[in-house]
Image (cartoon, rainbow, N blue to C red; front, side):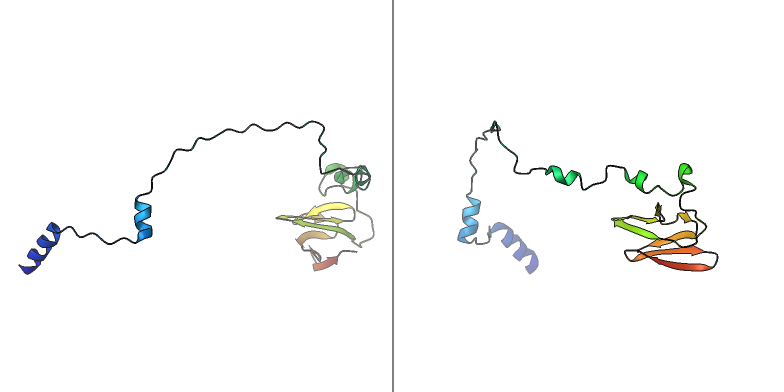
Length: 143
């Protein structure tokens, strides 16, 4: 019975929490409408770019496509490239970027899982590649 009386009394009495001065300022806040001015781009004539392309750098890159320099493994027109009777493999380049891993073995671009004359390219790492054949695995380092 006393509980009911206390709840009823608290309902009749308006109890408000006290606010700090900062909270009172936020409660009185009212915003003003701000006019948005659309700006137009300034057009400048005869302005030079701060970035200049040096013509001499273009000559540093080969003019031929990479596919012409190092043919892709498995391509029909390149099936005889790199099939010398000598069994030595020469690893010329390793390229690893994001999830793409490429290597050039005897002038042929290979990926993980591709077949070469000495076996299957098992793994390509920054230090070399692992070739797997019937005899086992062979580590081939870049020369």
